[in-house]
Image 1 (spheres, helix red, strand yellow):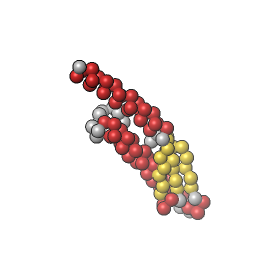
Image 2: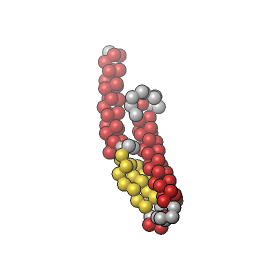
Image 3: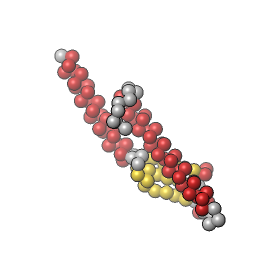
Image 4: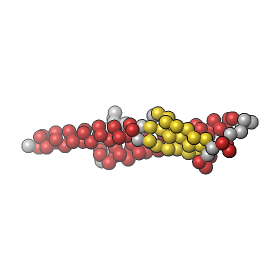
Amino acid sequence: MMNRKMLKQAQDMQRRLAQVQEELGQAMSEGTAGGGVVKAVVQGGNRVESITIDPEVVDPEDVEMLQDLVAAAVNDAMTAAQKEAETKMGAITGGLNIPGLM
């Protein structure tokens, strides 16, 4: 009896994990830099969906600053996606770090 119950629980957890992984793969996360003058949106935490740059920040004399802002915004979006993944996966696994899930 106990083995059957444990197997069902494991199968339920596996189904929930698969569903959350699918949701996370489609989720959009936004990051910003420079007080919001550069925004990046990533899908699934690994694909840049869009970059928005406020024209005020475009300075042909300081392209390096703009490049830094874009990188910072993308990194911010990736961090947001990772935190979302950790939160959703942690809710299912009870905080257990199961290798290969993320």
